Length: 415
Ligand SMILES: [Zn+2]
Image (cartoon, rainbow, N blue to C red; front, side):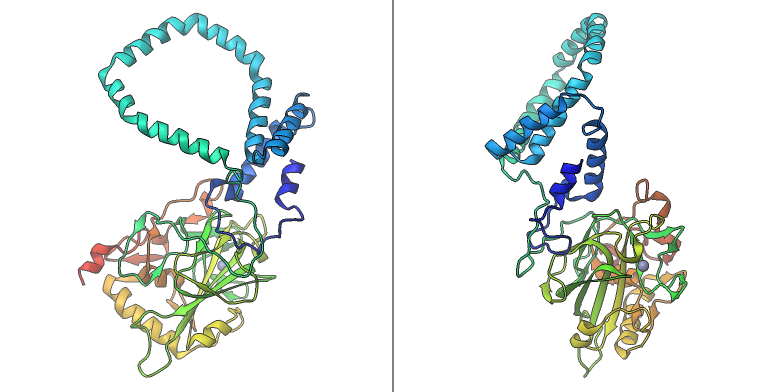
């Protein structure tokens, strides 16, 4: 366990907030999966009183790693397999002997009739090329030195941001923006707070929207523009993405307004802090986390998302998303007006709880529903987040579409 942890945060690896390689999409990049594996390792292998043979296996694994460059992941699997085998062999042997004695004859006749079935034979023949391909792919990935470890990050001058993968959900060919998460578990509501837009807070009202999501969930840039990364005591690791408002949202004869999206409490962010970088819609800009004032165990992991409309590019880049600043701008009023006419009125789409706007802030769910594509369908979060996972229908209503699923092509086609 200790070894495992040390490897992840060794001196040669920079800490969180300094990732420039393409983002890992392998399952190992998920801290939840990592956590599960560590627990498993801790209980079964690195337990102090565990089987004496494990050290031997660890040496074998280390030697393999050293001499042949086999990735630590592969060697670790090997160790696990061997230890598991050694721990379970005596009991298993007794069981197998019993089973063999009583069931082998029946199994054999079952297997014979199964294979004799022409449908079985046909499916095996059809599946054979696929099985072969899968086996080859697996062999190749195991043979590669890095083994898809996904934990080696380094500093560099420019971020190479991984592209968002297409997710199932509402597809809108005309959408100017893209949805910010690959999953949708709705609004976070737990014993520490309510995450909907303008929910009551001790300091007044919630300035953003809390999208419930497990730690490690990818966060995507909703639009093409500029991004910056930073950290603060309350927001934790944050990312700001600024981009021009879509055509039709601007005011005639005035500078083109820009929006500023703000993501807080992230666990990982990909670039050097306090610098602006180019970003495209769908680029991964971070991972959901529990940093800043979201660290308490009673607070379920979520993405705090804010959307502010500013009069131009410069003001959007200067926007600091401070809760105390509730100043208004004309551009935000105009944005809300167009959103209302072009989308909300059109689809009979309303917020059940609050207004769409709070000064220069806009309800991010309404804006994304109206302007983004590929929102995954709402699905209640699995345990342990399930009790905090509230569906959109609790806070919004739309006459023409299901707010849990989003606006679909068919609705747009009618207009
Ligand atoms: Zn929040």
